[in-house]
Length: 76
Image (tube, rainbow, N blue to C red; front, side):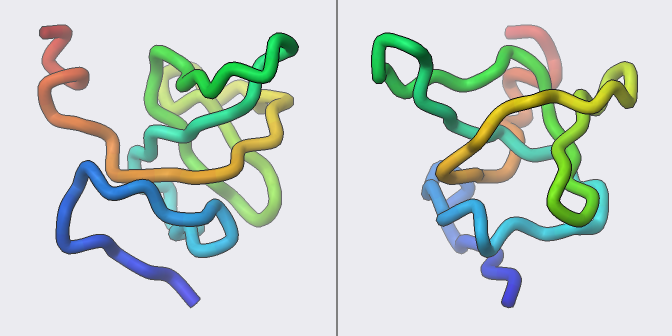
């Protein structure tokens, strides 16, 4: 089931991410166990994630997602 948060800053479990190519910000644990987010929007397709800018599959295991922030889309 897809959950669209009412607050765009709300992190939602990745299992609830929309599969429709919506721009997402995802969070992942890096090798030092710090939570980080790629600097580009991601799209989900099935069980895979893709860099929205170049359509390349990315090999990450995200834990949560939220809507890609508009201010990041504008490069601010």
